[in-house]
Image (cartoon, rainbow, N blue to C red; front, side, top):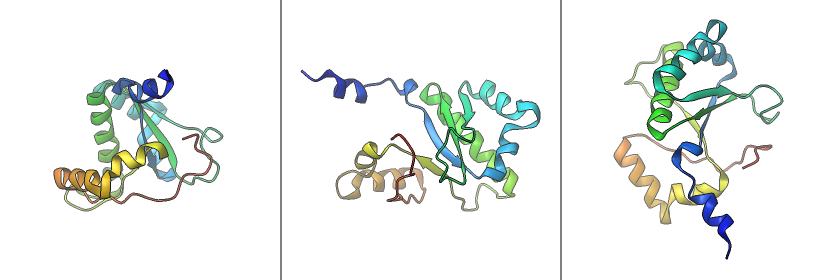
Length: 143
């Protein structure tokens, strides 16, 4: 019996971090002076936010990777805060369109898209968001 495959897909939501891309020139705004902003977001949301340093992320990537860990509710709240901070920095209102890049493991792409795109269409209808799934992998990412 192969329990490895089952265990890989049955991890509690808390153990699967969110990963997103943030423009390199926005990192200092997310971190804040002496780390105050990122610390405040972590405390308010109950999630752990970290930004991969040079050498930890693929060298081919110009943007920075933000990792958000915690319960699903905490990760969702922290993700909203990151988007809010990026919009604030760029002077974009909630009603204006914006781009937010989420990194998902390649193995998860078929699940997110669903049969003939049914799952991704349902997500777009429910959320009101326009979602484009990039076909390219980030060279150097372990998954």
